[in-house]
Every structure is written in structure tokens, then in C-alpha cells.
Image 1 (cartoon, rainbow, N blue to C red):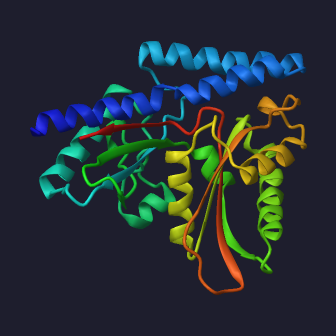
Image 2 (tube, rainbow, N blue to C red):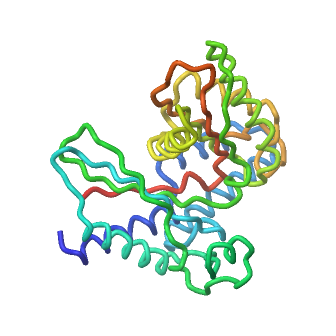
Length: 284
């Protein structure tokens, strides 16, 4: 594939991720609106869905916080990626941020200056660099799939990655996840959220599992543990934008990675806002 074709596909994928609800998310919202008894909550979710439909039509950002690009590359054993491919991928991200457009959020300056925000912001959307690319092995030997997720700041503020003393009990781990989630959903503001959970052997792995849960999760496909977490957190009655009602959490996406003989499990929880996960994928 030519460089220009790669750039175009990456650009379009980023724009789609930042401007479009996936079909399963649209269906989830419609079901929740239909079954919600709280008039204010129903009104709020209807407006969120309408906003998403307008954003998709206009290819405009779902939210003013247009997000930081997070990229997953799935590679099968018969496919390969080169430095030239990666260069075109990054060029495509830049073009995508220009086209969306992304909100200018890049802090100028050297390392410490960026921490302290001494030099202000770049006015350019494309200055928002993507997070480091995650590589994932695919069982499909012919697959080379790009997934882009646009991660907003609010959910990052309320996210948590920490160890849980599991005591050889799934209930202990689930209870801790529910406790964390109940604490943060009322502080998030942009509810109803989708809870993304990763469980691994290290903080890096747990965070990676969380990102994969977001990328692979489907609002229409939930296992018993995901349903349990959603049900229990919805008992807070925080509701959309804190207006009360049955829907604080749309669904939960959880991915469990390899574990080791240890007294702890490392858990990463991200309460994705009402517009997230903002994701799209394309195959090469």
C-alpha cells in the first residue's frame, strides 16, 4: 500500500473515532432511554444521542475535549510493519487531528516546563502527539488492524490503577472494582459512563488490558461479571450528568490477562465518559 493511502486510512479512522458512536453504543442508548423512568435522565440521554448523530453527520468532534489518540496495532504472523509504515501512521494521525479538528492541548517546552505549563499551549491541533503505540499479536495470520481511541481528560482524572489483595476470591476483586467505581461515577460529571477494567500482573499490563477491553468491548455482549458490576454501580442512582435515574453506567468492559502466583491482582479502572469509548478501526 502506498504511503498516501496509509495516511488517508489513518486520517479517516481518527476522524471516525472522534466523531461517531459505534452501532452497539447507539443501540445501548436507545434501550436505556426507552426504559428510563426519570424524565430528566431520559431527556439528557436523548440529547447525548442526538449530539452524536449530528457529530457523525458533520464529522465533527463528539466533545470539546476531543481526546488524545491511543493506538493499537494487531499484527498476524504473516504480516509485518516497517519504519515507513509507522512514519505514515503518525502522518495520518496528524492529518486526522487537523481534519477532526482536535482541540489544541499540547503543552510547549522541555520536560519540566511541560509539567509546570510555563510556555503555554501550541495553537495547532496536530501538536497533540499520540500515546505510544501498543502492539498486539493476532491469531489471524493475515490481520493488520489499526484501532484508534480518543481518550478525554475527565476519565483520566477519575481512573485508578492499584493492587487488590484477592484472597483467592473473585468476589473480593469484584467488590473492590465496584467500590472504586461507586466512588468516582459521582465525581466524573459526564455520565452515563462505560466502565473499562483491566486485570493483569503489573501496572503496565493492567492498563494494557483496560485499553484492550475498551477496543474489543461491545455494549450488546456482556458476561455475568460485567453485568454484575454495571448493576451494582447503577444502584448509586447518580444517573446521567448526576440528574438521578437508573443509568449511571451503560455497560462494563472487562479484560483479564495472565495472572501469577501472588497475593495481589493489579486492577486498572477507567470510567469512560458518556461519549466514550470513542473508537474506530481499519484493516490494511
